[in-house]
Amino acid sequence: MGQIGVSRARHIRYTRVGSNKSGQILPMTEDKEIELKCEHCGADNLDSFVNGGSYIFKCLTCKKDGPATSFRSISKDLHGQYELIEVDQDLTRRETLWTGEIKEGIDRIQLETSKGKLIWLKKVV
Image 1 (tube, rainbow, N blue to C red):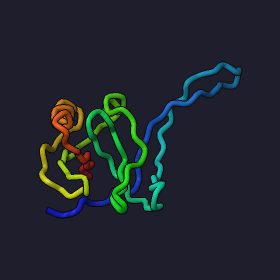
Image 2 (image 1 turned 45 degrees about the horizontal axis):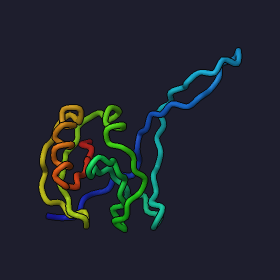
Image 3 (image 1 turned 90 degrees about the horizontal axis):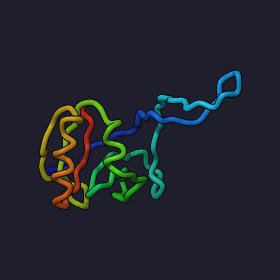
Image 4 (image 1 turned 135 degrees about the vertical axis):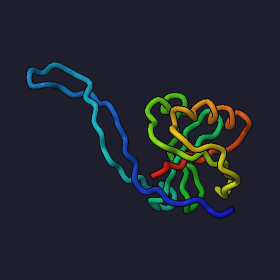
């Protein structure tokens, strides 16, 4: 099985504090397209992985970890079709575990990662 592919940009939704014309402070939700780059090698070759309870960006070029957060906290914001692919620490594909709407795969991700598996969340385009 071969090395995994490339995903260059991420669509994110975030909330920041802003104010309206009368000065009232309000949370403001924005959608934004961002390009992530590896802090170690500068490559724009990052993708999403889950290991244990962590949601991690990993660089597919140098294989180092990037920013991470709690999978539980981010899972509610994930949407769309994904492949769940088990990979080894060198990011070499072992097997495709599941394909479908990510909301339906959350329990499967948690089950597989609780067994110590590293799971690549490959967005199906």
